[in-house]
Image (cartoon, rainbow, N blue to C red; front, side, top):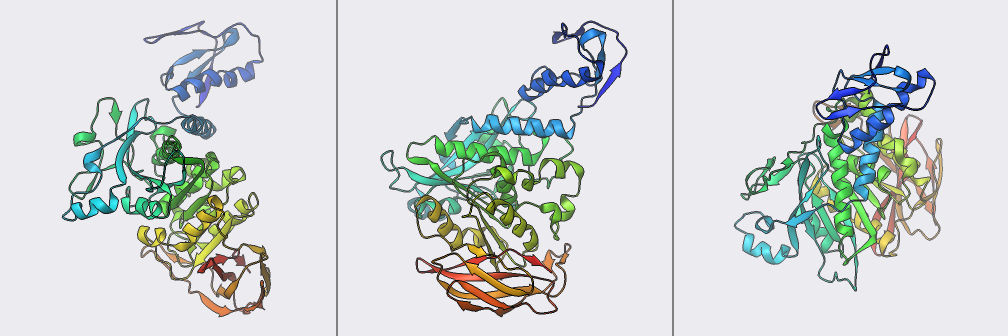
Length: 478
């Protein structure tokens, strides 16, 4: 909030809502305006007692200030953190909307047997200007889930152009996980195989207002609860609480995975809510402001960088994280994933990075990757882990090493001879990758980086429980 001093004028404030009076303690005049922000901020957080723009507020000793009606970035950050703390302590009201358990389609009767364990629900999201919002989601449980046999769970966060995917829920149900996938952009099914924005038809309800569609951080200058990303992160935290409310789900074994924009939301969420057992951001990540793709431009503003850079809270991320991306992904560049990996690996040695060559950008491609399922199983089911790098590469002479017990199938050096560059008009990475094999001796990998290389990473393919899975080194800029 911006506050301007005025000369002592009044001893109270009269307004339609009532009166405000602050008195009793003598303090230095220069800090009076700061102290007044405490009750005002409390009022903002609760949605009550919010001053009117231009209103004169009295302080101690006859001092007064003028409320401009604007929040500073530091106040927005405080409001966001307090709101998410409150969300973590809240199990939102939710209900089944059975008519939407499956989309309307000619295959409905066949699909019913395939997806009968998946239910459509709505739940209360974050408040917007003091009013309720509503979120649509699919939730499903594996057949063996029971109070006496609680199963692990996962929150699934879709990306741009996506919605709540019941196929994604089923993919995890088939692996023995309870799962919830919400629509984080205010979309609801219309019952005719389409999704529409806003509370329409049977979803309209008195006391509820529309949330926000994905606006690409363009509302970062607004009040905190008037921003899409604020609601997307809050809805994700609340979805985790819904899973935790079921006694057939092991609350200590609930993870989170997000795709593209959902990876961005996931990266931010885990900095606020560290109750998740594991996290798998796919494509989307932190350090967006340092990316070479389109997100570098999207996150250029001061408000975005102050409020929504996931890396600012990576010191609070304690769960193991799998950072998963393609080396030529046109939205998210390898250098930023590498930095996310390094930051979060410092807090948990089971954090790894997987960089895939020729990995297309899309929801279906992302949720079919075996690395994601193997990583989750290694955390919550004590399955064999994807090996981590014990010694990272450095310089132009490669002498890297995997952890003890790693069964290396092959190792490659992926390198570029020009700086990372992207054509944001065509959504393509214009810098080509080259590769060459590395010598493998047990868990060691050795080789020489070409003289013309300006950056590289190592792809190590390991055999894990009979599957060939990829673990990648940090990206090294030369």
